[in-house]
Length: 440
Image: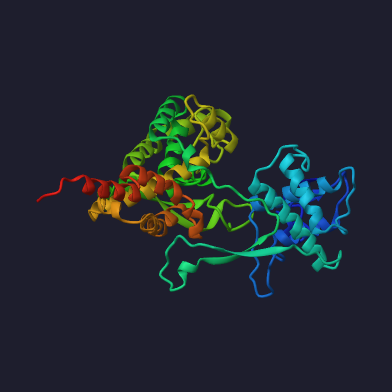
């Protein structure tokens, strides 16, 4: 099974515009009716797992629709293997075999083993389809065993019961997802060495990559920046910006979440990132001199009447916006690229550095570096959680603090390494007191 997008205007001409951006599933030339009904209802927000009658529909973005179709194609690929399984007769225990196949790479057409988070998403989608089919009367009841567990909150919220955390429901048998290992993040020296080579080989991409590393924006958000999103120096830069050391840049395109339409990059919500003033100066130079030059080279001869792109970043050789695959290849194949260093790792690096720097500044401002020695690790964790809630979450665009809090362990280890573990420091103080000679 595979999926295709409808031809441009196909459903619009048939007075069904809502289906224009819904992927179509095809199986050896046939049209699997039930699978496509499920895709339509999911894409248009008419049905979702655990959706109540009073819930507002959540219309999926174009990328989410493609991911949904990919996951469903993998499920039907597994069904069509030699056993010829019938989805109308499957129970949850059968899906654990599908889960194992995804881990081993035998349950999808690519034959690649999937990571834990992807495996869970694929199995959850299969559960969603079978549950939908049961609700629509296309098969018998389908029950997914679930368990409830309490997740401790690290945000130390102001609510009286915030210390109790929150209760979540998880699918039994789901794989444990291991968060990124902060210890594998490269050092600042390694990143600067890599960036130095990048500036020589791909100077424009180096600017875009530096923007990601120093602001924590996603690759989609950086790459889809428009000219109108970046304030120009001659009429918008103000003295307060120079004093604070950064320029506010509004992200509106490529932001994760709902879009104004499925095929648009314009998000329904936006956020502001803080571009350091030295980087903003170099981007301004690119906008004033380099970019106009590149556009002039492209719009020569037969292209002079073509519409000019409003995208901020252009390729050094194509003079037009480049593909994500080109960016990823330039990033990872550049000499001196550290191990495990990829575009999204830059977001991890920024997050840890931001927590460490803001916490270090808070300790210095209040003269608490020495006081850290007598405090518990929990106090330090709570302090950093406050920095996450006030500073990091708005910069990263995280709706849930839990997404940002996974960086706390790395930041805490960094600070404890700098100031010394409180218990170790306390023991050193006690030992020093015991070693002092007695008087009298």
